[in-house]
Image (tube, rainbow, N blue to C red):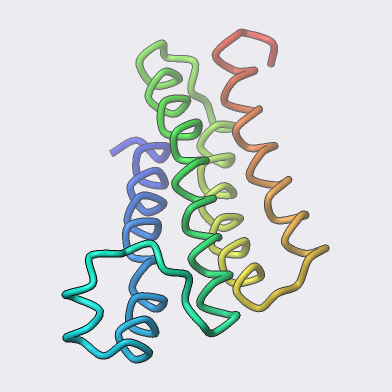
Length: 132
């Protein structure tokens, strides 16, 4: 498997599982019966950490819409390289860091982890465009 696809798959898996802690918190707040019967699904968790993790998850999903196609385009156009392989790995690490830091409520570090992920996306875009 190409390293870009490996790291993309891990990033997708991580994003897929990010909702588990805040849903468990929601179930604890509302009780299983109320949580499953309310049909709301959009209620913000009462615990600040859970609300922040929910926002971090939404941010991860929003950025996956950019990152995943860039990885696929780079591989399909054979513009992937050692640099894009490293960028994919760093993106994965940055997204984990962003989720943890966001959940803990550390603003400056959250911005830095987000910027790191953005830089990785730009590496892919610039590689596809032949600018690097």
